[in-house]
Image (cartoon, rainbow, N blue to C red):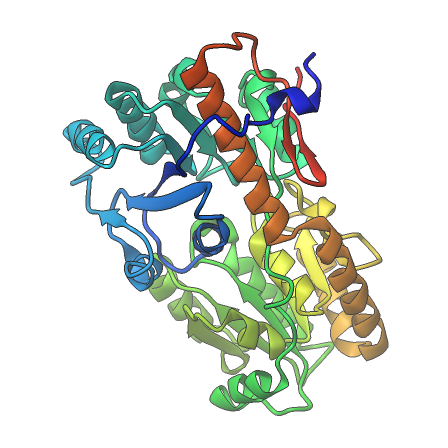
Length: 408
């Protein structure tokens, strides 16, 4: 096995930054999407010049960064639009792309890697963010494993899942934890007051919130049911739902039919996630599946205790009984007990919140994540174009953090 130092890029490897294209469905406001934009802004422009292609529409975030980066969109006309292959190939060639990183599974992962191969893009990587739908790797995507240089997992359990359950070769699966800007995500009291006033929430009322796209896998129905039951224990509680998506109309209709409807506040998408988190006393997720949710890291950085399901790699961030509570997925009674306890016990809530911020500072920083992507992309690119080292990659090094492949 080569030493970590053997994978570092020689200083003479390139005299220009690498042109890296990220391929995603769209850049609507969401955890993975916001994470990508934040990372693009953190890259050292002398090493990485990022651009992004949205297979469908650019979305709110895509439009907001069009003045900073090259943003391409509307490449696919429908699920069975095979002509997307030619469009992507021409785009990659015209932009002289050095490396492609697909973000998430599905169509973008399939068409992106195939187009990169045909366009002669040297380095092809796939970043995955979930242990189930919508990031399950189907048969067609597995067929393209030989032309993929690296797969990126976001936590150790997620990395094992990709190897043991998805069948990816261990030597190609690398761990780069999600990271956030902990200097940005701090409690903002003035923003908290503005958010509470927006929904007429009294300053003395405890607030439990969720920040998640309104999609089936996030299981907002359970959030509503837990909220209704929690009100029996904490009658002055309010519940803030931040996010938007395909399920919004149905979820709003469902909420309006519940007794607690006056306490469920739909905020839609917001660029002021820090302000929304500042208005909360407790952060919760009720998802069916996750890998390493960015929203949890942001909430912990803001000083919030967290109640979340024991799925994916959440237990790497949420330390049960220290920074929050982990509950069996779908266990309504366990959620109600945890929410009621933290919304009623201010001292315990503050204790968990302080511990959570300290933990996330060491666990998931944006700086470490960006460095991980930079060094992995450079390593793949250098080995592909040099042809000097024909051995499979066994390690890539990030300053202060080893990024190592998994082994079966």
